[in-house]
Each structure stands twice: as C-alpha cells, then as structure tokens.
Image 1: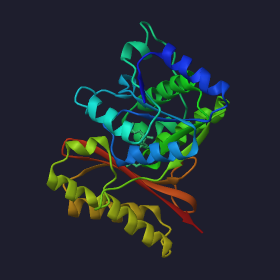
Image 2 (image 1 turned 60 degrees about the vertical axis):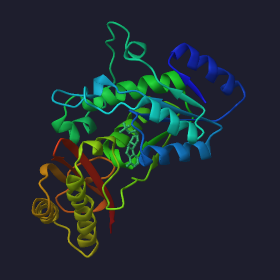
Image 3 (image 1 turned 90 degrees about the vertical axis):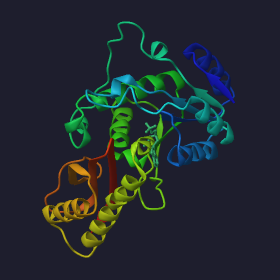
Length: 282
Ligand code: AMP
C-alpha cells in the first residue's frame, strides 16, 4: 500500500495502471474510518484491480458553526485499517496540495443543493462537489463509491457527473448501522453512551414510518408528525427537519407516491445526525 500526498506522484502511479487497462475504483472520505467506510472499500476492492482511498477533511464543505476544528483526525488508525483492507493507494493530500493560493473555481449543482441539508448548511454541497470534482479529475477512476447514508450527497454527485459528462460509474452502497440501528458516522464519536442509545430512535421511527406507508398511509404530514412524536418522546434530540421527498429529484411530496425517501436531520448533544430510508410506494 502506498500513502501518497502529492497529486503529481499519484498521477504518475495511476498512468501506469491505466496503460495496463486496470480498472480503478475510488472511495473519497474524510477519514476516521468506520465499518461504513470499510464496506465501500470492500465493494471497491471486489470490483476493481486498483483501489484508491482518499482521506481529506475538506475545509470548503464545513460551513459557519460546523465542527471543522474538532472533526476527528485519526491518521495512524486510518492507515492501519486501510492496509488491512488491502487498499492499493491512500491519497492523503494537505490543504495546500488541494487548494493552491487564490483557488477560486467552484462546482455548484443547482436546486438539489438547496433543499434538505442544503437549506440549513448553505455552501456545504458546493464544497463537496468542488472537492469531489477535483479528486475525479486527479484520479480519473472508472467507478466512484458512495454511501446511501449521505443520500442527498450521492444524488448531487451523480447529477454533477452526469451534467459534466464525466465517464465515471457511481456505486451507492447501503448504510451500515450499529446493532441498535444508528447509522455509523465519524460524528457518532461526539455522542455519550446514553445519547447513542437515544439515537436509535431515528432509524426505528423511519422503519415504523415505512411500515405505516406500506400499510396504506399516503399523507406525508401524518407520517412526518408520527416520526416527530417518536423522536421527541424517546430522545432529547432537536429536530432540524423531517421530509418526505422523491428519491431522485428530492422534490417534496404531499401525497406519497413512487420511489420516495424520508430524510431527517437532528442535533443530539454535540452531534448533528442525519438518516434516511427509501420506500417504493405502489
Ligand atoms: P465521510 O468520511 O463521512 O465523508 O464519508 C465518506 C463516504 O462514506 C461517503 O460516501 C459516505 O456516504 C460514506 N459513509 C459514511 N457513513 C456510512 C455508513 N454508515 N454506511 C455506508 N456508507 C457510509
């Protein structure tokens, strides 16, 4: 396994692989690796000859009030875990390597970036699309591996790739959860043991809502209210949003139909947690 910090060195390494027609898979992360990240890495390993993991805590996707300075940084542990998974290359750039002085070009996916999390974290998705766009230009992978946990991010990145005609396949991998249903996240480290227990209500309430919808309920207001009640009754979480949306366009649904998703964000203790569930309504 190679740990590479320089774009030039990475490009040189990859040129050889491309000349040998090797398939290249790419997993972008902000590090502090957990089983969710590892599942992406395993899919990537299975489907490609060369697997690249990037670890970069991208300052441009943190907005005012976010946790950039306290975001967990675990370089040694991450390298150990990536090695165990037989990753070929870890790309670990510095801020300076990614953003030269005076960097001023951004990628913005309109509309999709302004709803759900985008409404509360203006500029966040522009930071994500800009950095992933740069990484795709540097690595030129065949396939990009993303997690369903960050469903809006995955939809936006797919749209960017499509709109900009990048020849990259996108593989969206299922959300990996703790035993109690809490979606794994680097930010779960901010939770106390008790808050972790409380946080299990998020996925439980989403699963119950799915069951209610599949049993015939089509009124989004009723579904949202039932999730709100469950969360407030069973935890100290402060709800930021709960929305029923079309799973592709992220448009709000009043009457539930088609391929839909319930997405939510809450604050619990020091952590901001997100989760979602997909439902095919007949
Ligand atoms: P992050 O390091 O949080 O930026 O995440 C890097 C990638 O891992 C993103 O594509 C996430 O959607 C994905 N990911 C994070 N948590 C999970 C999880 N619990 N299950 C599956 N994928 C995840």
